[in-house]
Length: 398
Image (tube, rainbow, N blue to C red; front, side, top):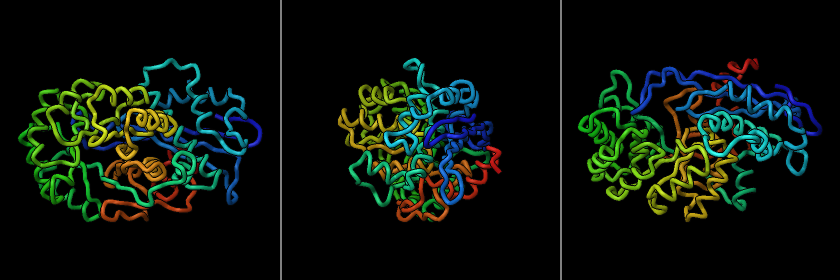
């Protein structure tokens, strides 16, 4: 799709469905046929002799929606008055204006998969916006939405411990040990796909490898009924885990609230809520405790950073600190959000979903924290050469 206009212009938007094939599983799904939206937003702005291009992709767990982008959302950008997509200076793209254009003529509710493809496109728009401004995205977020404050280092934890064919307890131990050797402190593993007794052997082994249960989080991916969630909670409660994630269906707020009444440890959830309205309902009706629990929206799954800014504002009205938010997805935009908006941290995928998982290749993890590049404009996808090569390949940009 090509767009024409005045001043700063979006000249082309490329998108494709790319594979995230893997034999690993969580408690609900196998990833062998998983796909992701990959997007590039090309502009007429030139930096160092090259046009500025913003890149984005969607997190794992939802299938790509190239049809929705091609038939519904990108035509709205093409039909928009070009100046209507710019900020007040006329010298940069406005992510909020683009988002509003994409969502024009959409009914409220029914967020579903449209939030997933818009999230990837919104990410690419923010990447282009920051590159045109010649600033890292975290710095723009700090200056515009956080009074200039930011975190110089961000808490990160690896999402791992998946079920794989032939993976036994010793293999899980080795995986957790590997994360500690990479510099991580808190690590996360999957539960819920095995009988409780077998899962407890896995959990206890992982906690032992990490030094204590306080360094381990567990993720059931919404698998449990209330009775199963309570039983699992009682079994792991003595370990004092970092958190117990998504025990039941993400929209079953009653289950979540009932579990919290019987479980004293921290609960984490929110990665499968795709709008600020759904997230607000979780905080209103899900029993979540602002002083102990964690909220985990994924910016690339829930309409992008633009919608996540609204989520944070709405959560603040309900007494929630930004520090209780941990973006899901293990990607660079979550890392920029955590730094510039001073969130509680963010997920990382150092060992899975390659090359899309993880941060810049040369950023070390030190005692569970990472720092961000100070001078790289945009989100920093270019700092992962294998990812950059793969995205350009699937988008036929080589």
